[in-house]
Length: 299
Ligand SMILES: O=P(O)(O)OC[C@H]1O[C@H](O)[C@H](O)[C@@H](O)[C@@H]1O
Image 1 (cartoon, rainbow, N blue to C red):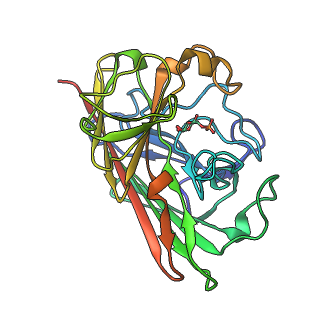
Image 2 (image 1 turned 30 degrees about the horizontal axis):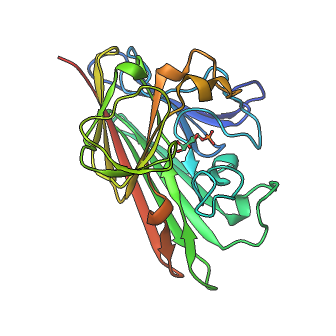
């Protein structure tokens, strides 16, 4: 099935993991790692010799019922505390559930993993209402020179509509968040989750302290990183919101699964349909969200 699929006891691999090499004609082979806990991608390096594209905390916890800090968590069926502001667990139960690896193949140096999740796989969790809709989520991850992610949610319940939020909460590794810029969102309106204000972005996004914003934006965003000397491009399809987050030093200090000096090493640029852009599906309908991540060294 998978190039290598194992279930190990030791941290951080107590979950089933799928790992493999991405052949790279230009140099050292690339690498990826995904685990069945949340179907979470934890590592992807198109060039094995280069810096990781994704950030994973050195203090990330790998245990049932806990979200892994880093990589690409899937937020579903709600984002943060949900539209009511009261939902728990934060960001929904998908990132706390063991997904099924439905298929894995490698062709021409590109590895494709297919993950499956439905209501029968939700673990028993405090706060989660046991009366739930039926749904399926099929999630394809394609590891090559670019990383492609496609999430498809279907309402398989004949009883009524399925209303949900969905986001791919990508943690990007950066040299120093205080020196990066995120381009492409100038002119986009956003909700500032720190101040509670509606605002409009002027120019590139820069980071000076905590940033937590939900942008009404779903096109291409580019992270320009002068420290690591690279540009990361995030192409989004069917995302109506882009969430940009870094906790800054004060919030980070209160996070037990992040080392105190790690907050400048990442930025989250998250693709989704959240808040007012939540998705409504009638029985039998489906929704697909896709992103493509590419990396380019500065000349
Ligand atoms: O700590 P977590 O539940 O993983 O959430 C981490 C962050 O996720 C998103 O970016 C939200 O916009 C933030 O408000 C939240 O703090």
